Amino acid sequence: MAVAGNVRSGPRVARPDGVEIATYHLGGTGPAVMLLHATGFHAHCWAEVAIPLSADFSVWALDHRGHGASGKTASGGLSDWHLFVDDLLAVLDVLEDSSDVPWLALGHSLGGSVALMAEARRPGTLAAICCYEPVVYDPPTFAEYQGYASVDALVQGLKLAGSNSTQAAFINAMLGITNYNAVGLYGDHSVSFALDQRGQASGPDNCYYVVQYSGTTFHLVSGADPICGAVIPGKTVTPSS
Image 1 (tube, rainbow, N blue to C red):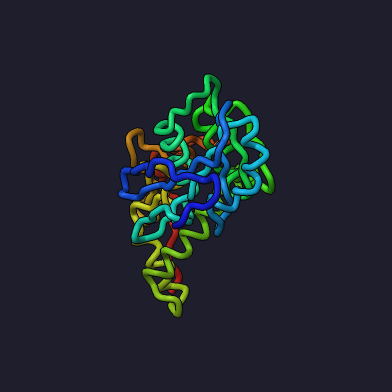
Image 2: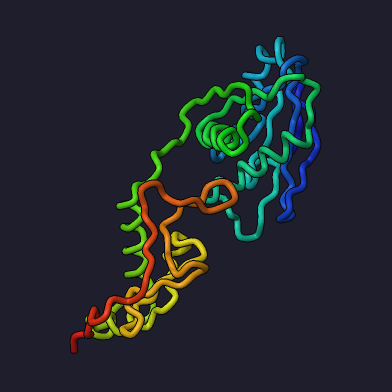
């Protein structure tokens, strides 16, 4: 991509999955500020904004993966915003701007969310964040997580039994699932739907948990108690014919 005006190309930061993140210096000296664009845009959208900022700041910008001159994996992977956060933190580490204080950040939409997530991941990385239209949601409640798990269980049963199956065929398909982990919501635990193992959990401590993926690991959902123990005698379900 051509670099215009006072914008000069910075280092391309290589990521473990082979993606390279393009960076740019948009002018100025002083405290370092990183400009983070929205979905579908690129770093050069900040060129006009950088002009007044460069009077007081060392202004940087990047192209998020899959945008502008940055690369992307063959599968895309742009729905996982944690990857954008990983990229930003890697870029900040590589640039090592001469500023003696933590970075500042200005983000639009996706960019604002990435800045907020980066600071939550690694507190103290950003001295201040200015966000315009950041995409921010309240964490799902325990009931919502259970809803996700229930819908996913339905989908798994339909995949096994077929979308036009009878009720009996669907129930039998569900009873054949012995290692259900709710697409990762149970972490490294699972639960069995089989008649002889009804509700039996498997995992390091014979429990299963509802968890939330944040940063680079799973965390317990607040208020979600683990489900542990053995099958209750006599508690079985017989599939209808």
